[in-house]
Length: 342
Image 1 (cartoon, rainbow, N blue to C red):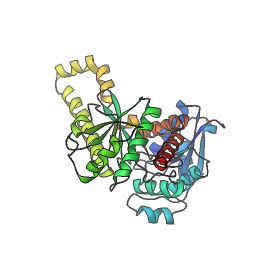
Image 2 (tube, helix red, strand yellow):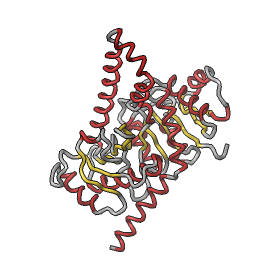
Image 3 (cartoon, one colour):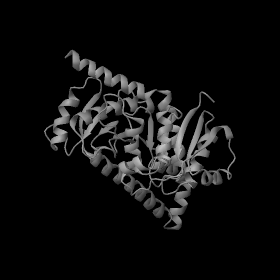
Image 4 (tube, rainbow, N blue to C red):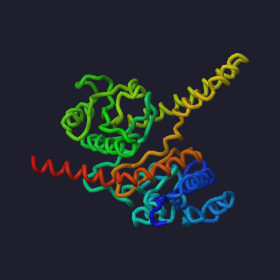
């Protein structure tokens, strides 16, 4: 039990809580013997869901939290006032090292605020970004920031690039990942002031593989492995990606069922088509980690079903095994040291 990855899960957060959250937790422990899930929420409600399943009782623990932070509540006030909410209780488990990670489909604002104020930022990190994996032509790319910092400075984007590179190399396994900044053109002098000021800073970073600007149409082609932007741009890209993905899947399925001939063709191509369409399913990629904290905090979609919850829990294992936080700390310390020498 001591070597298990301990993941605190917000059992009350999201549109489908607690049913899909608990199911996702059960699926995770049934797939992996090295994971222990701590379900945080209203104990009687969580226990009522758990009796539906068969699982190793040593791999599931329930921690009571009587309050729930709703999506529309002001995040800072909610974190301060609802000390017994599932989000606050779970984040405190990470802070006290009783859990290695926290996963929630609940209030994005509360998770972001709580992550910074309760778990705390790594020393030297200015703004923790949300980093989401998105499908590309030959695999996945990391979109950073996709929701945490709508108003960012050039120095923030540089740190996003460094943290994103570390994540892609050590969690996803892409050596020397290509880093690009989102812009409206490839030329260095294009874009708004934020991008224009950030470009030369990234060009001078010797510890990342910066390849320049990337236009939105090149993101699905896998032109870069790490896509850097502020959260306003990143969230628009992410939501558009998800919308196009679900619409495309729906249109393809509708077209294949439109006639007898197409139905016969669908039967022939079903295995290959299923595999291809799977790459556009957001639930396959788990949640978005909030990088740069003293512990792992993962935010999943508010409408997450069990599959996304399961994948979000399992992705925490790789994060811990690769000791991503230590690598981020080392990167920031090395940068600060080099600046002092210069």
